[in-house]
Length: 288
Image (cartoon, rainbow, N blue to C red; front, side, top):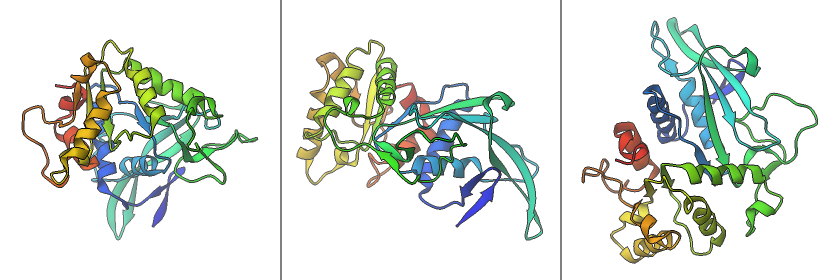
């Protein structure tokens, strides 16, 4: 079920709570004076966008203020046919079943008219997205980032992704982020042997990074007790992408104090990662 919320239609709380908790953890990190991490994904679905809106527009206890550390946000996809869009949060009060309630609404605004603190959210969707137009629309209209467009841009499975008519600017931006990152967190990507280009991409991005502290890898395969050979092969694939010095910085079992923050069978999952950054964000974002 969906409802009309401000200038953007927002979905009621449906889907996994894990993704809403992901955004909650990131905003909590920002509220402590830290930068929002850059997000790079190979998924072309709209899970990140829709869970973002759910987290921003959830109900707030009456008479309390929004705890979000910003008043506006800008979505940066670094994909030319989808321009950067600025959205403003407004707290509205209403009554439902005779009970007073309040929640944030999201409203598209011109960048120059936004008031208060603005948060830049970068989501680099390297394989395209269901909300990406294949070509720049003839008429410039506000981008409704939560919904699939008629002819979405999805990158086909080709070898050289940067020279295949794909949005090279987005890939180059991701490469630049990898070269400057202090800590890199990889979630749910086993680096298959057949994906030669991504192995090259990681080498090109991480190899020149002189400030790299750690690379965290979250994947359930790494904690499988049935067939340890699969985990061993995965670790070897990652190790082969980097120099001997960098290999020592790869962490396949994020538990800085020796105690896992979550129990099987969730080890290595997205839930594991989100729980980690909710409860001990410094262990991941600072690589402690």
